[in-house]
Length: 372
Image 1 (cartoon, rainbow, N blue to C red):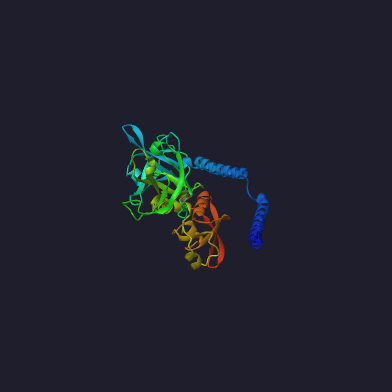
Image 2 (cartoon, rainbow, N blue to C red):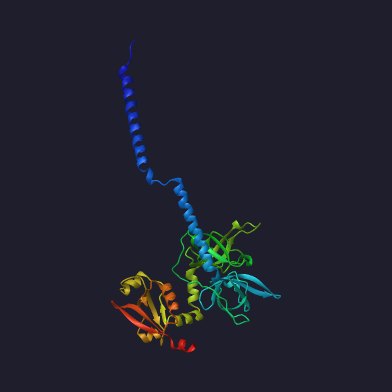
């Protein structure tokens, strides 16, 4: 009997070599896993981090609601002696100017508001409206006792654009339910062809519908900054299925353009800013053209004739970087600081002009002092 040991030995040697190779690879991977074991988070650690993150987001929601609810309003009309809710809005100045949608206000002369979740009614006056942008500017008036409500307000920035997928928060009055909070994600940063009457207009697409009564309500990011105004829903309603509807909001750049054109707000801004009107958007072209040392600051668009700023020597294209040693980062920061210092007799403004920094003192408007 003959046995072919040569062939068998060849096969066995290959199997042994492959086996040894597999064992070596396994041991290498096992050893590597053991070494890196401490670097990988445990299930408990992952759960703990998730809970902390969820708690942080919830805390943001709670803080934003408490801070912002009294910056929002519910609009009412009077019918047969009763006040009927018609929509939502929010304050944009400390003087009581408010914004809502034009299709909510509809040129009505007699309007009332409730601030936040308070019960007291106050009359409101329509100042202007724009049907194309679907925006209306109003102002709260004193009640029969001569009192005005206490309220907060939002600052409108044309540079805040939410990304698709980012969280948003709303405070509005769906079905007349005052100061109701909701949240979702931005389904699309900019959507056109959503409004059949204005197909080229761009809107924020929301993950939640615009409920009846929510139009005119504020849309915010997780910092509590205004990013839009709730406007309308699109879809196939029926059978109570809200999932058939998609919500849309007017973005801040359109809101900013509308408010910047309002005479009441422009006059107020000139008064507060002592005659300085700034350029809201900083562009690479302007930075290069003016040879600015930094993009952090605001450029003066023009100085009102006869204003304290003109008397102090400020000019068009001066680049403001500080007010009373407080850094100015952008147009929104400029407005906040100027409002805070509205009652100051003089303020110190640091600015850049023609290659060097300068400092000047700007006084109050004499008309404002006489009124006081």
